[in-house]
Image: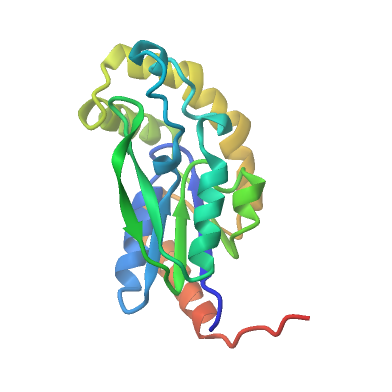
Length: 212
């Protein structure tokens, strides 16, 4: 049994990473594709007051349960299903239920710090960075956090200035140099996504390289 192809997809907040993953999955519908998102692995903050949770820097590497994420990634690579956590972004805590993720021929792992975190990066064979203009990312982030995650305008803007932008400049943007492929213009770049899908198909079809 050959090992699955692990594809790490990183990029700034609201850059279009999820859209790129969705389009890859649609294009590879004839393959078994497992998907895990780094956002599901935020640390559970239910033991601290809600107001304190809202002040946590969710864009810093320490906000994630990276140990669990890597363990789950290794389980999938070994052909075993996992129970992925479900994170509630309104209460900043994990829900009691989980989502079963079955192993696949390809494993997609998506998140802002996937290429920054060495422990995660070393588990991937193909490294992708999704790039997008800062102004578009800001607008998308505002819209998402207000409409989908219960944030108010002032809090979301303050969070962006205090946490999101500094962490992007400090951790996310520099991780671009680890990428094998950069997808400019986010999830709307059909040509780049098509080329990426073609490259993944070629990797899947190639005979496995014997280990020394």
